[in-house]
Length: 91
Image (cartoon, rainbow, N blue to C red; front, side, top):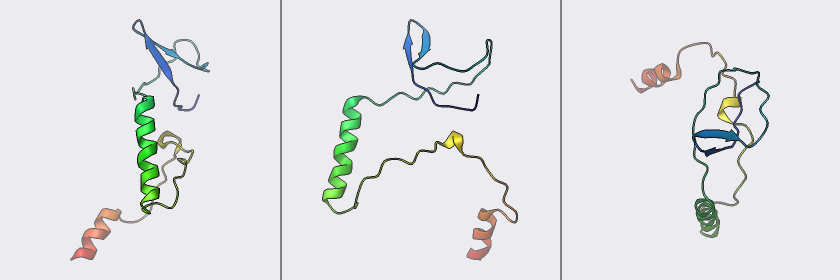
């Protein structure tokens, strides 16, 4: 199974996934706990984005792009590190 983000409920000391996991028995996984935002936080964020549109600071509010950080594959870049190039150009 590739890395995935799933939702779960914590109850009685156990994390219970809200979907079926395609994992073999005794599979070792890493879990990162990211609390889901509550409804009030989501509503507040929506009001904030709408206000930015009303003020003309944004033309539209777009839905997030569908690729998570864990789905990205790093590539090897040839040449000097970007930080070194910046330092050299500042001299």
